[in-house]
Image (cartoon, rainbow, N blue to C red; front, side):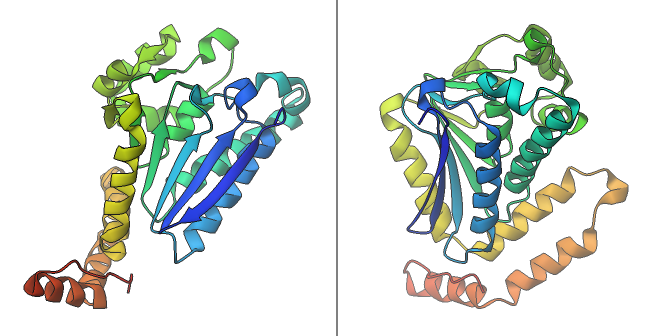
Length: 262
């Protein structure tokens, strides 16, 4: 437990990754970053997984950033920093590029690299006890273009500057107002709300969801870089699918559709 670990679960179409390092508020070590990336890649290729949830173990934190206790070993030289940063980047990219919908379930402290990881998910659902911060300015850490660009895309430049310049802890409601969090719910309702979201998403048409996720990613690119042909092809693939036929038939028969992702 002192070293931290990743727990990976799959049930009822939901893939779940749990950051488990409770003695250090689920701070994420090098090995945990690598394991998270591997688990996400596994979910991407698993046809039984329709939606992915990332969360933290226990009740005190999603993740309190990187595991500072391991900095000397994991980030004590330029070569070590480069190796560590690549592992972090691989985990972020695996979640950002996941072709399936993802939800970050948040409790308690969601700080630094933990917050950055949560921001890679498509949807963030938080309990009212959540506290978010990016304390880079208190540690003298550099923060790369990709991470800052992603934050600016979510909250705008002014909020991004406030978050970085102050390194302040913000409440769940403040984070929601900024656009960091989609929904804030009572602590005792968090699991029920997340379970409702995952069941709803898992029951909807996978091809439609995957196409919309991909098209949304195109919309936030610079205009010259947008692949409109890809977007149109994804739309046509939905219309040509067996799921589209099933959706229409289920509607006419007034029953719940049984989508198969093809």
